[in-house]
Image 1 (cartoon, rainbow, N blue to C red):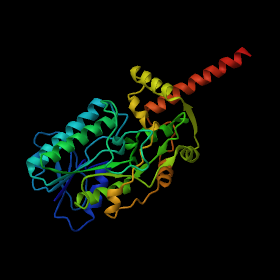
Image 2: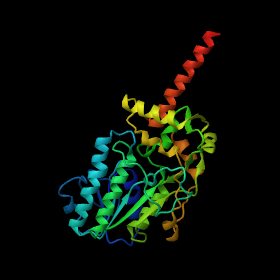
Image 3: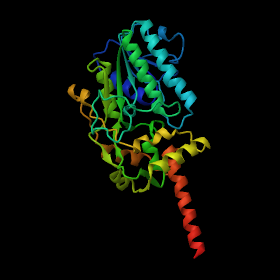
Image 4: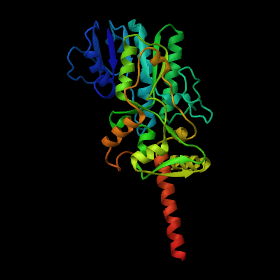
Length: 337
């Protein structure tokens, strides 16, 4: 029997509907604080932080844990309470209930942005992201640590690490995509950013394989290769604002301290070096992405038509502030003439 947490909405709902279409599962359980109508699904209402969660997992062999937040605009404390503490409780409850396997989902950002990163990165590349209590990547590093501890204590854990997610609601839009709400895209002088996306359909394909036990271990998920930001700018009809790294990072830090943005300066890490994954483990199991980076981006742009939508990330706030400063300087120069 397979259980999916966070099954009423978002990514959890997408996987639940995929699994419900199969006829070879012994049972399918949806776990969430609310229930929705999906044929063939047994609903057990629970918050994943509930001390009695183990009772809701009775009889379950595999738990796919998707009751987590990818919302980079959510305040860090409640987000971490769900992501980190919720995952810790889920792993304890799965062990107490006798589940054989747990599937978790973090992100490819845990590999860390480094100028010397190979392109692409293999699944077993070291995790070099900087720990951070504000950035979403910090949550994902903690979840990876919890998975390692659980594995050492005898629980089978599979971790999927998707690239920037596309095809879901705006709550899943990472700092890369939220830049598109601004007038310009930030780039650091001397570095050409590479964008890699993961469409929800490709991630659900990977989650389905993990749910069935067809893949194990830590596995990255993403479209083929990386898309140069110059191509992103052309598709989005945006110009870039290119800055020295020190200026951009210092400005983002000041904005965070002034509470202009809740984002961490670590959210600019994707500009420092490439994080492009190969998805080699999934490919060996027969998985292949249905979506290219370009096709996924085009779909995203068609769905997010309001350029004013979304909250500032560190990159967006930095671009806005420095862009305004540039306009002020230009106006002053014109007045002097």
